[in-house]
Picture 1 (cartoon, rainbow, N blue to C red):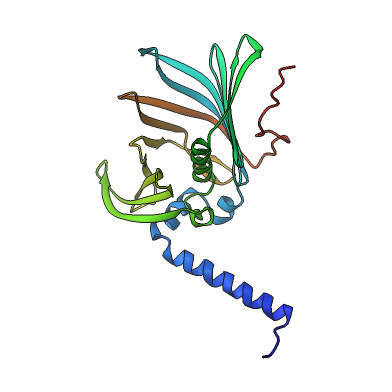
Picture 2 (cartoon, helix red, strand yellow):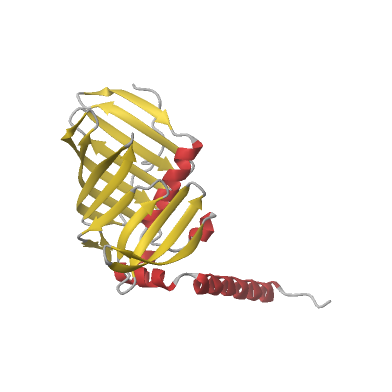
Length: 254
């Protein structure tokens, strides 16, 4: 047997990786390349490391559906698996975060910052947050690298628009169905396995990438449909977040 030099072995491994990547690209539904191209160049999409949204959240008051609640919201995402969402209401501030494989939520009294309650998320909640983070940063490509898969569900019509339905399956109970306009690649509708829907409206361009100006979510909550609207006022990309920005807060209140 003729020995293989380290340099030759490295070249063989590189060729193998290139082949695997090429085959993965071949199996990707063509509509996903069109969808990505509509949002930005490959360089811009791949270059995104962090995204920071600042906006306003509007939803029905759970105690009185005839009234609305508003909150100032900041959403921060960092590749590959970190996010932090802070919603500031009149009487309290609610923060939910993911730090790799740790997740937590904190509710703080607006009138007394020392009065807060911290809850660590369970494994199921963490899995869903990880899926949500991937969906927010990956732009439809690479789910296989985190153990998920893509399924092409074929042509469908949404709002009289010819669409291609693509399922992004993270777990059996964590699925995002995305409907893309066949002609343009525009994301027309997102639906979750539970029946909730998300629709994007308008756009903000930052770092050469298109982001939605507004996101309207309709979710089933206690046998009724709740509508939540997020209006983005500002989007910043590739800023550097502080150390421990996503980490579980110290339990001490001092």
